[in-house]
Image (tube, rainbow over all chains, first blue to last red; front, side, top):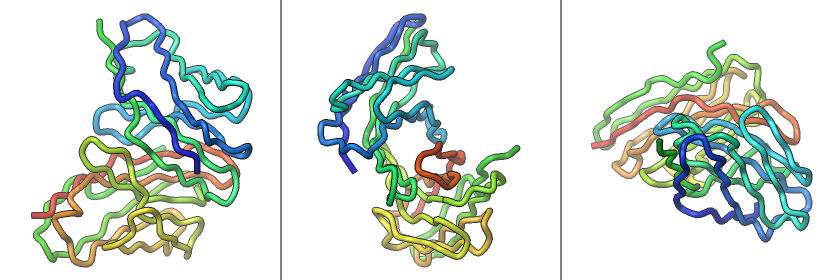
Length: 112
Length: 113
C-alpha cells in the first residue's frame, strides 16, 4: 500500500474550517484514500473515503487532487469535540482484505 | 446495537502469564481485525480474519495467536506475556466487499509487569 505523509499537528479555531492535508504521491490507480480519527484513547472512527472524485458526508468533505497525489480533509465548522488524531490512509480495493495501515496521523487541537 | 465489544477493558499480567482478549461483533461482519497501539504511535495490525475458521498474520503477529471459531467472535491470545506486549489493543470489524468502514471497539488496555 502507498504510504502517506501528514503534518504531525495542527491548531484550529472553533467555528472555522479545518483543512487537513495528506500527501500520497505513490498512490496507485486502484487505491482508495480513507480518513479516520481517534478521539483521546477511544477506538478510531471512520470519517470518509474516496477514489477519484471529491466526496462529502455529514462529517466532512474530501478533496482529492486530479493527479491523486494528495488530498485534503475539510471539517467545515470545527468544534471542540473535533479535537483528535486524524489518520489519512490509502488502501487497495482488492487483495487487501480491508486491512488498513495507520501512520502517526495529525493531532488536531480545536481551541475556543 | 452494541457494535464491537471488547473484554476485558483493563488487565494487568505478570511476565509469563497467559490471557485471552475477546472481541464480539453483532453486525454479521465477515472481516475482523486485531490492532495494537503503543503510546504516540498509530495502530499496527496483529492478525486478521476474513471469515469464520480463517485467520492470517498482520504486521506484528509474533507472540500472539488468534481464533475465529464463530463468525461473531475473534479471540486474541497471549501464551506467555512479555513487557513488550504492554499496549492498548483494538478490535475492528468490516463487512465484505471492496471498500467499507471499519468499526472499532473501545480498546483493551493491557499492562505486563
